[in-house]
Length: 323
Image 1 (cartoon, rainbow, N blue to C red):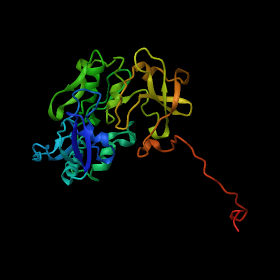
Image 2: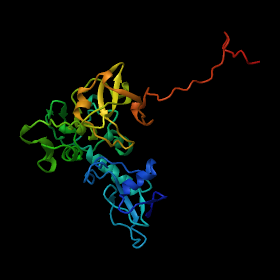
Image 3: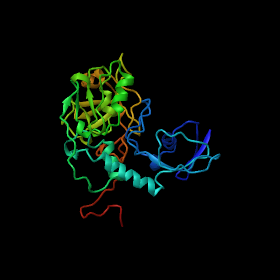
Image 4: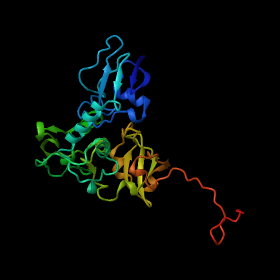
């Protein structure tokens, strides 16, 4: 085991564990944010740079600090390593600049974006962004396209995290989309205008940290904080069948895979469960979905209602048991 220190918190982890995953074992505010890293996708990470940390001591054998900030998602720990995240002003200033760079071409269309309320870039900008942008040049623009019967691509919102590419490459049989062109002209697209129709293609929507890939069956139907999420399952021959149903009244507006506290899907679901099964009698309800209190989705969503003790008040507003 390797003993390391992150923001004055000591922990022992297995060798070759990344700094990010070591911080996640501690939890709380010291966990660096991540926009491109996805623990269930191989080779992910190292694209967005928002998880940069400062290594003030490389190891017990070599206590010299690393000369530059490193990406915590792809840097393995060493025994005796000392890391700074939120305790380093240099890291916070660098993260602020990275957020500004990510927002250079990202449109401010949160009021009409279906990802609003559960967008990682929104949360990142709220925690580390500037109030105003210094960018005055024209933003790059792309036409909205349908890359399949159920997915719409808004390339203007894309931050090129490559999550959808890795997802399609690793859990589907025939990936036909990827990153085209280079530099500021790089974009996610399909080869020769093909449609993405694989049985697990809908998972690209779940892994997208912004609103670049949206569910066409849910577009503009409702804001997520006005819906009621519940855990449900069904017997499916293609996937695990464990999902989250998003209700409004008695109608199922959308179906998504279940995510952990870091917004990552551990068990991917098929398109049949996601798009075709939106009838109540198709599912077995497991219970209300746990929503973190900091999320806007938690508005008016309660897992347990506790009745408060009440007192009998008289006509003048004075309790009857008061003297």
